[in-house]
Image (cartoon, rainbow, N blue to C red):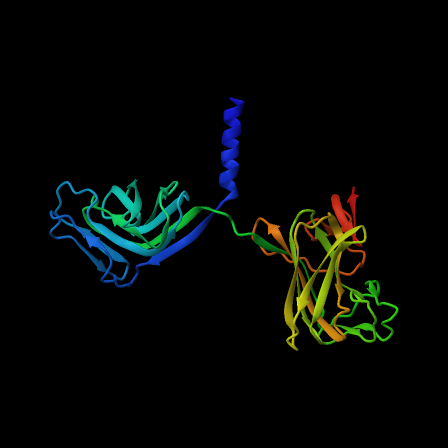
Length: 363
């Protein structure tokens, strides 16, 4: 029994690890049917037809005897399908009666078909048919055939969707910190360090952003180190992306250092200057530390001689799961108290809080 439970649990986890991905959609409202679409009625359905209509494709089944799956009407084309993937076809249609719908999906070299019983609502309704473990590889010439011989009268097909149930979910991107520097003063407690050889270097506030000037230097590629963000919460083994919007005086190599004084990672990227503000991305795969509220980003631009203007800095968690973009604004250490969600709280709040970049339990 324990083994069976384990297998079921593993199967459940495997299913949850995947996502429904819409791979094709076709709307038939007010749309003409291509002449080359496959439309076939049984010999006994002499008064059947498939025509375009304002509400969708109108498929009419008249007199018939024993041809349950006729007509066969193509309602989608251009599909690419993969062997062993599981698919779901969602039909939005109005059915004249109760009946059994059959969907045939694939191409003329190989296709699967499944049925479902439909109870008509008298209005447009969604009907789903699943294709578990699809048996073929179909590259671009796949179709969906709508087989509605069980419904005497006019069925109106409004929309067809094909969902891949086996696709890996796209990684969501969650913004965990963002700082705009245009017209903003630099806090006095921000870390700014130039090499001894950079005697004429400076980091000052400007209308367009933080202006970091590198003058004379000898061999100090990663100096200056200028703090451009604070208040970050980062998680070990998450992958992050730092997006810098800046104007660079020359081509060069940018290094970003992210974490806190207890532990931080650093990565570099080559930059080709456009002469104007541009977005530069530096990724931090599998971040190595847990950083709770006191994380920072250091901008290291010693390779760019002249003035670099930092307009905006954004940190994105590439390992997020909810796909909801949440911005936690960077704040100066002003004594305010925040919970772990970045919400400002007062002294009556009970639990783990962050104050001046430090985490503690407030009782």
